[in-house]
Image 1 (cartoon, each protein chain N blue to C red):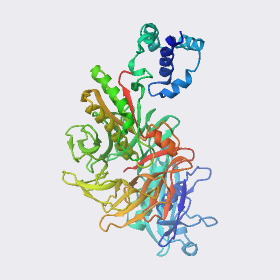
Image 2: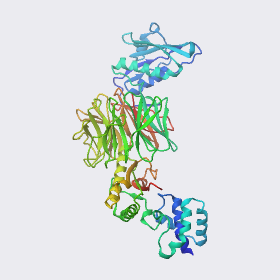
Image 3: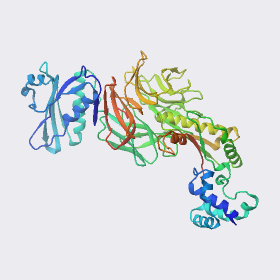
Length: 191
Length: 399
């Protein structure tokens, strides 16, 4: 029983976090409950919107038996598709090797759905000129765009833009905050 | 407003701003106070204390010897008379205390809405007669104010007073710049979830997208004739500089290469574009002919020189330089290559020259809040323009 509810709960928790929300670790922390709490979460989620309705209908049939995920695959917390932020080192525009599975998964999804479009939003930390930081954020967005293009994704499915230092995830002026703000977010146009 | 004068007061002109005479009971707005603050902020004047002195309104009433002994080189006297229909007549004279002669005398008929503008005009006349350089006290500035989650693009007088909001958005606004004739603003808005360049009329508030290409659109700069702009686009990959007509037609690419090229600004003759690039491995300022060609590097000191502004006479660049983790305003004489650090704050941004080239407006951070300030070209006089409690950034000095 418990197993059946797992994916449903995970999906609900993740969608509640929003598209740029928690990592897999965060999700697992939140699900540590039993079947009763899973049932509660599913019940509460039904009022939350269309996503929840779609998942509730299909969850029982596919998930438990073969381990596949029945909802929007981009939201499957077990899939690298649920990773939406690529972080960069200071003054760096190189996509780190650890993100390879993530980019391969997004490329695979985009190749399977040719009408899907993704916007790559580059960001920079707050130090220095706003316009120069806009260009730095653009470089980070371009790095991810190029990686996806190399994996075969069509030009028309990709747009790299920059928010520079204008939309920090962490507004503090600390090294830790700066590291959180040096990133590219992968945002699907239909989400 | 807070005016902070650093260093020696050598060669400052001592001027006495005598409060203007008015009929009893008639309110006299602080004309000489506003004009005196203007002159003081320039760093080229010091104000003579007028407390306890007689307050003449006409030259015949002046005891020049008494003012000379107060140290005055020059003085301003005047009077205000109420006219029918809520209008006022203001008469003022600028006098040379040493030679005991009149240097200027004017009268104005104004409405009640024109007090500040008139005070700035008086300051302009005093400044020009005594320094030989036109005053810029009647000019305007634009800046972005953040208030909670709202961003406001504002236009204010050059002393930071009289602010009016011309754009309000829940998404960021950056990089405003006045058109050379002062009738329009160009700026970057993120309201469509990406940076797009808008041009907006200050007369009727109408606006349109100037550059909304695929990718990011930013860093707009007018040409001196106002007929075209430089913008930074990423439609062909990296951030590159393009030229576009003010009506959005005639897009041409100016710089090439896979590096960052951004923050373009035209020289006053329109022939050269200065910009920031990392093509040499660090952020430095370069110049390129507006007709195209190979860029030449302009800055060589340090590893981060960005946000170039050029003086109206084309002789100086002001830019932001990082040294030991501090970001300061630097003045760079183009002919000699000599540089001078103008500020002692750590997070300076966005310098721009006064229309008369005698001061630089910039943004910095004080107590976790963005503030605007001006600094004289010798770095010795700095004034803070922002009101307390306001978070201001991205200033641009206009005509």
